[in-house]
Image (cartoon, rainbow, N blue to C red; front, side, top):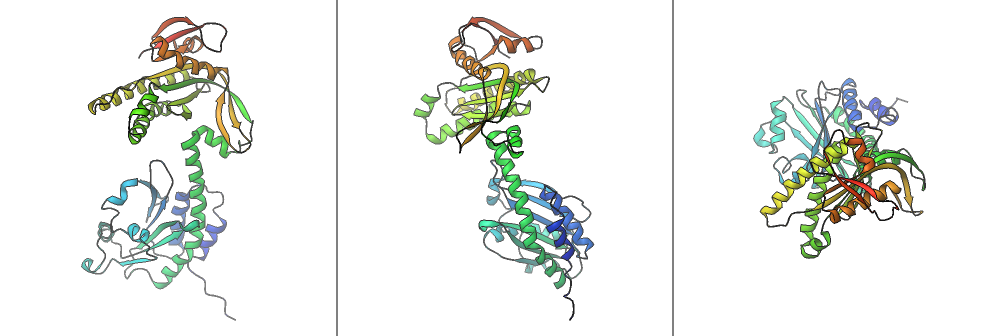
Length: 393
């Protein structure tokens, strides 16, 4: 009996199945897969993988490999791409409309072929043949993989058969990595990068946590109830997003972590494992002030009233971990230090200051920043008056 004929991609299929278990990132796998296909005798000159992702800013990602590259290049795809010429009439457009295979002979007269700038670009680079297939993930999700060659005459039938044989395994391998990335993205989006890493590492048991010494910042928008009662819903959502952008981006830029958005407020920490954490917090506050001033100037041009806010800042030990019911947990910080920051934020309105700092925090930054001493004040929940400072820069 004759042995079954070996497919050109059998070795690559075996590697995808058994040799990629320790590789986390699909771009690395995809780049190496393309090199291995060349080594197996498939005249591959260009290949792309397009995946839809769930991300607050991006519709998807494209991984692109071309001859001579060891790693694939990654580019992110905007949500509005489907209204642009780069998408309309493209292979991705055809696949999303239900095509199951797309083959384009790039050596023939362009007037006889599909009309899209992508095909002209490939012809200009000397490519001769192009094929695209949907890549099926579970629950009907369709992604896209493409292959192109510069071989005169294009891909041979054996090359196409070999590439087709890859598809089911590439689908499985890519889905695992895309979902791993999705889990990480969702955790970063909803609980923050540091908490997300801890959760992925297995810190999911209720009541578990650790004590962290950190600078704590709590910010709250003024008169939000009045705004939400009188403004259209969509305007209120836009306002909140703009306000949180103005506050959040400087916090992230200076090493802080936002743990929670609470209505119109936010809770962030700057762990003191970073020696300049307290200074970084005030640098973030300074940039957030500037961003809020710019936002208010823009809002003024549309007749909206300026947004006012208060920030309370303290430093101390917090319990950082899982708190909640048996089926619904929150990864957050609790403790007297958090309560103090919250009380100081509430006092900003009473004392007519935007940012109030506890004495404990002020002592750590007073040599670097100009602070206003505002005296000792009663703080709800604490027996002794607390010495407070205001920060104006």
